[in-house]
Length: 160
Image (cartoon, rainbow, N blue to C red; front, side, top):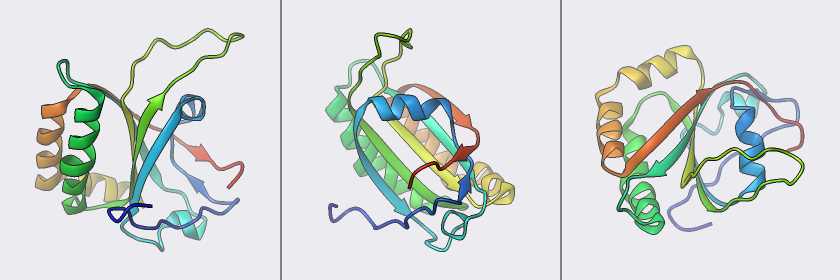
C-alpha cells in the first residue's frame, strides 16, 4: 500500500452491496492494480447492509497514453472525489492487461480503468449527483476520459 492509499474495511461473507454483476468477469480476467479509500469505515459494507454501487468502465481520450491517463486519474481526478458528498467508498482499478477465454465469445472493449463508487443509500447517491463538487469532478473527467459507461447493480459477495 502506498502512502496515498488509506486502509479499507474487509467485507464479511454475509454482506450485500449494490454492484455490477457483468463487471465481475471482466475484472477477474484482467490483471489490475487497485487503489481504494473509504470515507466511512462503519459503512453498510462492514455492517452487512445493502449499498448502492456504481461501477464505470473508463477509456482514455485519443492522444493520451495509458500512463498519462492513470497519472491524471490517480493524482488529480481521484482526490477531487473527497469533496463530493455521499461517497462511502471509492476505488480505482487500473487495467494492466486483459485476456479472453477460448470457449466464450469475447467482448470487444478497450478499457484503461474501472472506477467504483459506493453510497449508503439513495439519499447519499442523490446528494452526490446534485453537488457542485461532483460537477467539478465530472468537468475534470471530461479532460482525460474519452469513453465511459456507468452501471448501477447488485453485488453479492461469494468469497471474501
